[in-house]
Image (cartoon, rainbow, N blue to C red; front, side, top):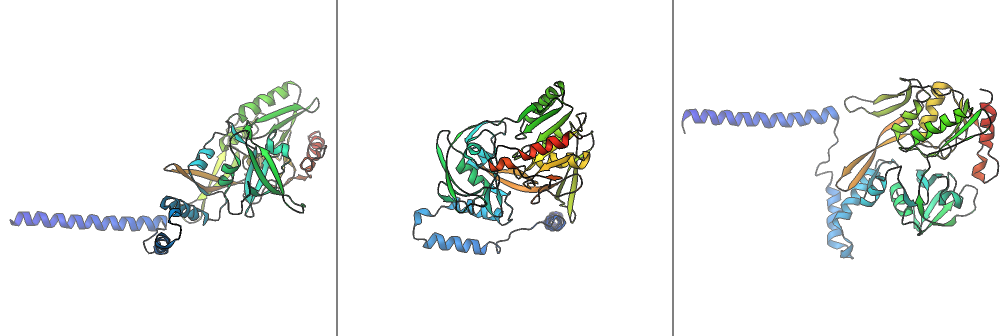
Length: 394
């Protein structure tokens, strides 16, 4: 080999070594900068040992399913966060979650969540089998068709409650002050949600009931409001009771009807990847804010998520009175990550009101606390009666 070729070979080797060193150094620097927590083969030793023992010794060999084992292990990984809103979903659950909020589906018509580790009714939706069966916010769902819900995720429960219209589902419910649980046999129906209902209460007061924040809510609300205004309404009652929420961009758009452009609607607290602590982003009103400021808002334990955002934004910015019961306390953002035909639904942020009040786990406390007698199946509506009294003074 000539001296020239040897020299070129030596230079190439040096360049390769520099490249490898640079790559290793870069990855180490990246991991240090972003504090990436990496699994190593040593970390997974116990998992593989358990898998091998099962694979070689479990008595019912036909029940050993590698794909199911991987799915359940991944789901357990997400459960280790102890966050009821972060979940790893299978194909069926992903399909259910992807159903558009403005669409229809076979079910019983209620929003559910997890409270203190127990599957709980957030709110039954108006005009649905769940409402007609008498379900109330706060009801605990102990079983679905006889299956215990203790370690069931929200989306697992939804997939079991929903089904073909005309079929039956049995829900075992426990309610505060009951001596024992009760079984409710409910026939599933096609659930179509009416976003907004409205009426005149008297010659000056308009009433707007928002049932959900879907793609139709903004246009329906704006149309209903303007119709009430034409009828002479100059002050309004916005009823967010038993509204489980919906799309963030819709509630921000709606807030702009009351709040001037550039007003803070909410604060979104996210993980700060580059630095210690959290990053706080502001979400602002698009305006024009030309709707009447003579407004009161009704909330109860079934008001959640987007409902709490609108209520908090109007209260903090316009001093709008919240009347009723403490809200549910769902103030977090979940981002979907599609993995094959499955989905990781992960909490990536918390919502705060414009004045910095954390909604998640706390809820909004009403300015004027009134027990919701409608939840007790009485013929009177104590919260609405109080709202009429207050709005007349504005």
